[in-house]
Image 1 (spheres, helix red, strand yellow):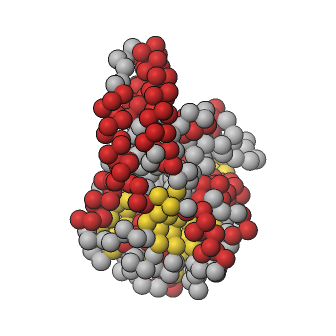
Image 2 (spheres, helix red, strand yellow):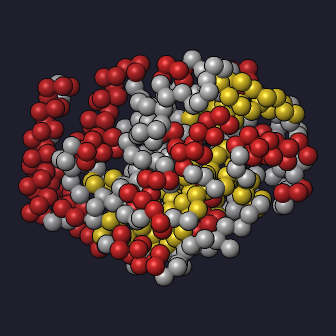
Image 3 (spheres, rainbow, N blue to C red):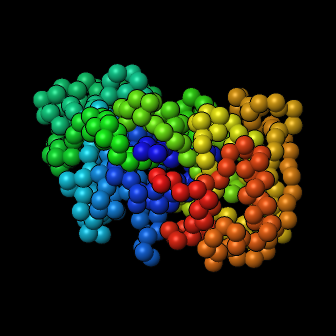
Length: 427
């Protein structure tokens, strides 16, 4: 399979970074298609932890070429900070990281408006990262955004920023009672940032098409999760881009005929960051039986917030498998369940024949559970799938049966070697 998409099947934080890292070793090209620095991938390689936000995590492999697609939104300050982090780690990326000229730029007023809007919503706040991603995508849809291509052209950037800032200042003053932002400091700072980013701008879409035509292996890196999709997610508690496999095509500028396989990443349980419905969320007494958030590695890569934790929801997974056309599951963090006496799997919601589309239905959904025995022993030293404890294998097989999709790999720890392969992708 020369082209593979890796997508999150829940609300993000499923462990996509590790799966992408494993597959990057066998790919020549890795592309990110949507989102911004509101997303994050954490990988552990050779004892070192790497955290990524917009740069594809495959950049740590020197043989790869990495692409940031036109469907993303770029905060220049954040992106250049990532660059500095790579240089500190002595990772050379100057001639193998490419930024689409069609991506939109996150400006200071986007971040400010994001934070003010969340504060104004009070208890109804979505729980965004406050990094300006939503307002930037809103400007894109409103045809008032600034793209990388124009950002790198001083004359075009000046004209567009003048118009945008005049509009945003009216919004800041009239809606939020906030003082206006000054043009010159923003223009001068962002001109300097543009000069530092200019050498990375490239015809990403043409480069990916050429690689696909040559039959070279391409890995498309999803960000966030399927139920954060702006159309099919748990609206309005969603992100502002298309997080589904289909969004890769529009976000990276590739045709659907160039995608060969979709791998859906899901935790062996479920988590969610921020507000919004979560039918299988653990009750306090159930949560006390889980490892603490730090031990379970359940602190957000981008925000450091504690993730909400719940039982695995296969009713949800069947829905996202449908939305993504998932070919295989990558089941992660099985090791976090090692100490539990019993483990529940949600197989459906009472009175729901299909996954609920409205917030009210989801908030009142009553999960239907199966209870399975725990295995009460560590899986972290297991090197092949067949050596897993019997109840752990039974748990994986039951998930496959309920979802109607096979597991291609099972992860029992954050390190690369803590991976049990059931299928060899790219081979």
